[in-house]
Amino acid sequence: AEVKKIAVIAGDGIGPEVVNEAIKVLKRVEELYGYRFEFEHGLFGGIAIDEKGTPLPDETLQMCRSADAVLLGAVGGPKWDNNPKELRPETGLLGIRKELGLFSNLRPAVVFDCLIEASTLKREVLEGTDLIVVRELTGGIYFGDKFRREGPGGEEAVDTSVYSVMEVERIVRQAFEIARKRRKKLASVDKANVLETSRLWRETVNRIAPEYPDVELEHILVDNCAMQLLRRPASFDVIVTENMFGDILSDEAAMLTGSIGMLASASLGEGSFGLYEPVHGSAPDIAGKGIANPLATILSAAMMLRYTFNYADAADSIEKAVQDVLNAGHRTADIAVDSSKAISTEQMGSLVAEHMRKV
Ligand code: NAD
Ligand code: IPM
Ligand code: MN
Image (cartoon, rainbow, N blue to C red; front, side, top):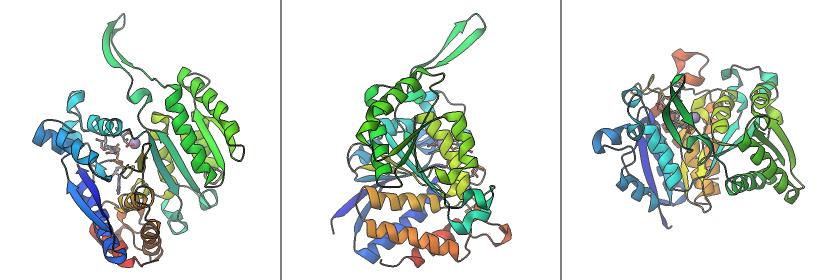
């Protein structure tokens, strides 16, 4: 088979720990299916600041550009939190998304029946939950002008949020297309009662909606959505929203599944190229202990196989193996009911690899 180039940027904290397990599973895919991957590693985030003086070195960006897909761990940590903007790991993360044109961030939250007890919510509420957050990733308040100035009340900080019709249209179209292939329900989340960007967002959604008469559309204000996600999560199918609302709602959605350690993501642009990363961060509180849940990263690798490489068979085999391992009762600490029986990051990765079958 054709060799696919995967740029690996593991980053900081638990990033390298969970990425190793995803690579283990991808190597198992090579054995089972005969697909071929070439892994190239690059510095990114805090470690890149320490070694190269910038969170996103040019050579890392070039490596990503010349790859077919990117596998990312996580970045950040207390060591760099008080650095100026250009020397913060998170700036590198925003930079790579922008540079690679990855405006669409897909974050599926699926409740596995055997993990319902791991969630803080009740079984009756969670049963049947299977939703996907489609988060706009390269606009909004993350990327607008930011500055400090003197005001009458002393120093002021300003963040601006900007959205163009083009930016809203392309993400909303993607969300409608995704809804079409699922249960045909789309919830567009905004704050149109207050924000101008949200008013443009809603107008744009309404203008596009007639092109998708088969998709049932609901507009919902973000505060209400945050509440409904806990009250009736199973009623959501596709949720489309702007950058910051999507960031917040997807962490909330993670807790429906039992742990942020379960939530995978794909960041896509116009073509098949994609960046795949867990939704969680570098988890400094557990880094280096070997106890992080690698399933979010492993499931992100499955999304890579599905969306960028079109290897649906291999993606299915990973997702099925994850199900089987969980059904057999194996748990990392974050999803364990009895934490004395929790297994390590490496054990979880190996179990998934061992459970994979050619399907
Ligand atoms: P976090 O997601 O790193 O951690 C939140 C909590 O969830 C912690 O208690 C952590 O131990 C736990 N957790 C996260 N992932 C886990 C996993 N795989 N298994 C088990 N438990 C897990 O969020 P935070 O603490 O707010 O941020 C820590 C750092 O990570 C910050 O510097 C932040 O900027 C950065 N961050 C990076 C990304 C990214 O790289 N994509 C995403 C979010 C946060
Ligand atoms: C995420 C993270 C990032 C974001 C941070 C680390 C910049 O929280 O990927 O969800 O807000 O997008
Ligand atoms: Mn986040």
